[in-house]
Amino acid sequence: MNDQPRRRPHKPHRRPQKDPVRFLAFEALRAVDERDAYANLVLPPLLKKARAKGDFDSRDAALATELVYGTLRRQGTYDAIVAACIDRPLREVDPPVLDVLNMGVHQLLGTRIPTHAAVSASVELARVVLGEGRAKFVNAVLRKVTAHDLDGWVEKVAPSYDEDAEDHLSVVHSHPRWIVSALWDALGGGRAGIEDLLEADNERPEVTLAARPGRSTTDELAKALGEDNSLPGRWSPYAVRMAEGGEPGALEAVQEGRAGVQDEGSQLVAAALAAAPVEGRDTRWLDGCAGPGGKAALLAALAAGRGAALLAAEKQPHRARLVERALAGNPGPYQVITADGTRPPWLPGTFDRILMDVPCSGLGALRRRPESRWRRRAEDLEAFAPLQRGLLREALKAVRVGGVVGYATCSPHLAETRVVVEDVLKGRGGEPVEAEWIDARPLMPGVPALGEGPDVQLWPHLHGTDAMYLALLRRTG
Image 1 (cartoon, rainbow, N blue to C red):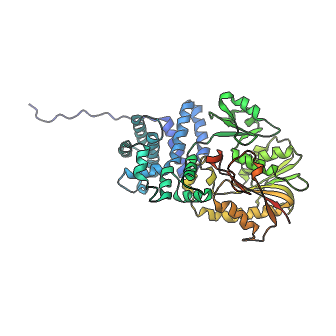
Image 2: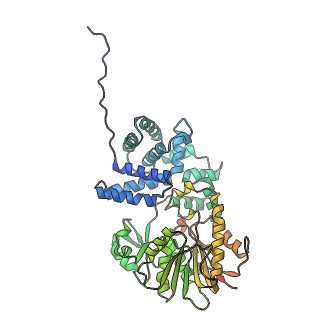
Image 3: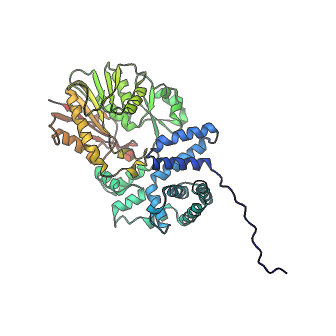
């Protein structure tokens, strides 16, 4: 009789099954991390390729989009949760592993995907992209994550508000601490306002279209979208919101350049500049930082309706080509050139209206580009400062006496907004410029909560727009 213990039958090796939705989302996250790409630029071509192969339907595309943007928006919170579930510093976890883990945590804590499905799908993805050993690590971590819901984890990993308010808000709302501090300074007020703002940054923004005057109408866009998928703009007379999302590029008016995708805040900035009173002639307009062309297209259409001509200047050649594409077909006179606004080719006193929408940190568009919050550093603002001041100073030289300059930026950071304008007007870092403020608030009729003026700061939580800033200045001498 054989007393040897029976061996368990060998378990046959199973090849990991590739889930096209989660694999695509992982590809997008890796591109964001490895190439400093932006999700809103990486994801659409990946989805288009998947649809062309027949792998995806609209529900798959929606899930992949949610996995990418949800993971990026809540990365700070999820990092803190993962760190509490492992026995090593988070920095020692390889970035691809952390991407799989955070995407798994998002499925567990930020979606309605059942727990067992979220864990098994994440582990299977890990087997495909990381290998068997790391998949076991992912499995172990995610099973620990299932012990609490999101509120429970936040209570465990975030310091109390009373102990450290900024660090608490940073972990709870997934923003770097320095950004929390900067936004709070710009917003002012107490806890409720800053929490509303940070939460608004973590919500998916609506897709908003702009009907370019004289070329299309809001009625045309609403009819093309259908009753169930169209909402009027909140504030802009040119805006139509897509209630259910979808592909705006499929609309005929967008394909023909008669309308475009444009946040309502950007529309309001362009419209306010166009509505500002000027003294004397009003025939020469300039967009001094025109790329990628959304504001320039709206300004060109408005200028054409008054018999004015727009010059659109952009320093980067590839962005200048985008401006040309955006303005193609405009009925009025316009020109697109590649030029540096700090060393302009035009003569002083040439223009009647100028928009200078300067390069900035982009802190006003964190809803759209959530990855930028993890890339930016407080010291980045020092690099933007001389450029912003130089562009505004040259714009005030380029406008004639009695003409108007609009200084705009997609950031609420005080160092990029009012401080820049005040420094230029007072001659800090250069010669003082003779100009006066124009109250921009009446030029955004119906828009509430615009502050004490004369400049305007828009907010995601108050206005449903990006956090655009606008100062209007009239040259006086």
